[in-house]
Length: 354
Image (tube, rainbow, N blue to C red):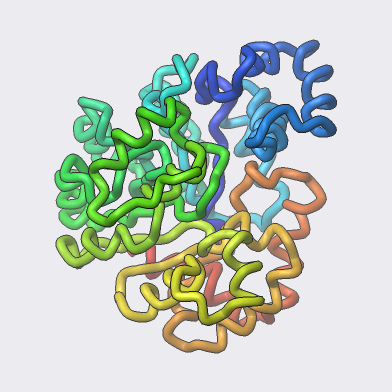
C-alpha cells in the first residue's frame, strides 16, 4: 500500500467552453472533431501558448471517458492493490473562459458516489475558489457529510492565497485538521483566461511589487502562484498543513541544475520553506514525469529535514500515457530505493493527511 498524493479524474465537462480559442473546445468534445483536431494540435503551433494544445489533448483523451468513475477505475490498475489516491477536482467557473458544462456541485457529488464504492482508496479534496459565494457551505457539506479529506487551491486562476476571502476556509481547515494542497508551478496553461487588462486589475491585490512589462497573461498569472505568497498564510494560520504541488516545476529544476544559487528559483524557495516551517510539504507530481530528474530528487532526499516533507504524486492524468503511468511508481521506487520511496509514498503522506 502506498499513496499517490496528486491525481485528477475530472472530465471534459468540467472544462470551460473557451479554454481554447476558435471554438476548439466544443469541437474537441465530439468524436469526429477530436480525431481530426487532436492530430493537428500535436503537430502545429497555432499561437504563443502552444503547450496548451498538447495539454488539452490529454484533457480530452482521458476526459472523454464521460464519468470520473471510469477515469478513476482506469487509473487503479496502474498501481498496487490498496493504493490510495488524493483526488483533486477543478472549479474552472471563474477563470474567464466561459461556461463550464457541468455544475461544480455535480462534479463533487460524483466524487462522493465514487468514494462510497472505494472508501479506503479515494481521498477527495475540495477545490476552493473564494469567488464562489456558497463555497463555505459546499466545503462543510463535502467534509462533514461526504467525507472529503482536504482542500485544493489553484491560485493562477486569479486569486492570491492570502486573499482575505480565504480566511474562513483556513480557520475551518485548522478546526477540522484538514490538509491543503496548492498548485505551485509557473507558466501553467491552466490559468485565468481573461484579458491582460483584467489580470492587471486582479494583480493590484498583490502585497509585493509586480513586474508586468512585456509579460503575457500566462506569465502574469504566475504571480498569484509564487510560493512566498504562503508565508503570510502560514504565519497567520500556523496549524495549517500546506503542500506545494509539483515542487516548483521542471522549468525551475532545469534552472537549478545550472544556477543552484539563484535565490528566485522556486525549487530552492520551496525546499527552504519546507525545511523552515514544520507544516509545509511538497509533492513531485508532473515534475518527475521526466526520469532525468530522478537523480536530483535522490540528492535532495539526503537532507533529513527535507526528506520528511516530500510526497509521491503522479499528476495523473495530466501526464497520462499508459506505459509511463504504469511504470512511473516502479521506476521511481527502484531508483530511490525502498527506504526513501516508503518515506515519500507512505510515511510523509500520512503525516500530511494527519
